[in-house]
Length: 161
Length: 161
Image (cartoon, rainbow over all chains, first blue to last red; front, side, top):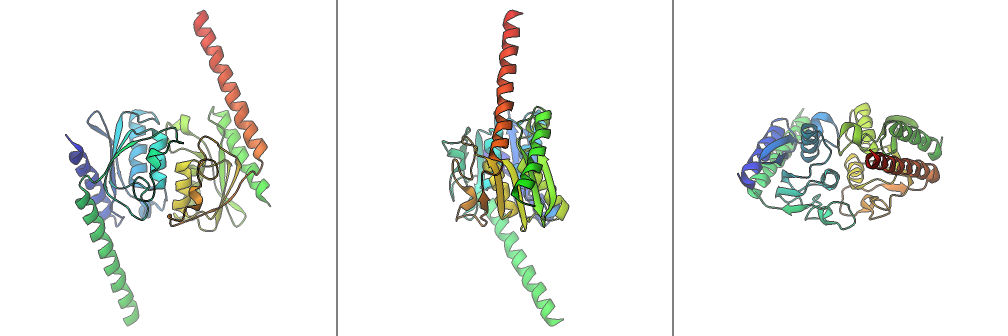
């Protein structure tokens, strides 16, 4: 049981998002080797800005353990967390975050800043990056390419109508 | 109808939190003069790290309008938003945030940093601070004083048992 094993579970969640036409991002929370929370991005389906994979997985894990503190847990997520999800990690005291691909536009763990290593906050988390990076990145790349192609087709159809 | 009017509504929410032994923080989301979402801190009751007043009020507002974008809305909150709630503000594109009291330990709008004016993010929000500041601060102060006193009493009772 290693980081790749759990990241594959997070990738399975990302695949569930893709099947719903959601940006394919998945997350799992692991405690003592057991997955105690799993979720995928559901922003479009729910029309909730908070329905990111990490946030939903953290909520599922907290429900499972009956506590808002996830002190002995690890969060696995296919994409670098955004500002909101980094905040949820701080609030839930997750001590270790493992992610797949970087998010140069919105990532707040390595790319734009590091909110998980901010002395001013009452919690800091260790971060391991790049686990199954290529799989995560590829899934996102294909998703956005197909989305662009679909939009082009739709535009063309509208013009020729 | 001005900022104080809506902040009083946020304070009413904070009072509901206090009655549940929750840290008294309340929030409302306003669009075209109408309150489209209101909530109070429910972290202890729900044991969810995400159950902050702002996040729940944003979720309620998004449910009401059927969209994850709150582009023409104002968020009123009695206490300066934390990192997670600032992130939820960025994700929901709320353009204006009005808050009461500063949070020197966790505030990420003025106190520790300003996540709502970060060029790297795809959204920035205007901030108005200090609206009914004294009322918000006083409510929190009394809450924490009573909490400390209760803990002292409980400790004393345990020692004399």
